[in-house]
Length: 80
Image (tube, rainbow, N blue to C red; front, side, top):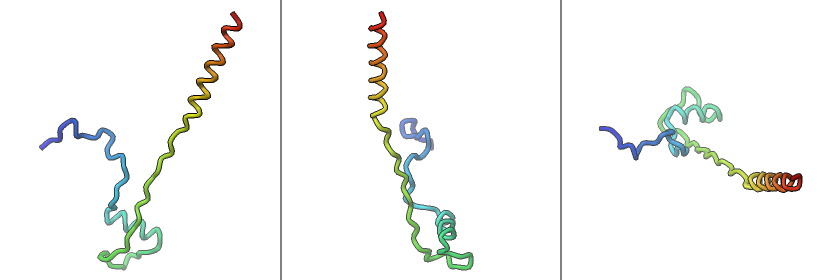
């Protein structure tokens, strides 16, 4: 069965996942020295998923560019 065009996501999943796979959890636990190769896989400790927060761009730059553009137009009118 196929998915309707309106339901497809072009760029894949854009948000962060809440659940890690077992391999991802083991990798994070090994990096933090909370799990070794001989430990039991059942009953692993929980691993927190870090969410990435993207900073919003400042609108000040657009206002400065608009002010510079307006100043250039005023200078051109004075020269004529």
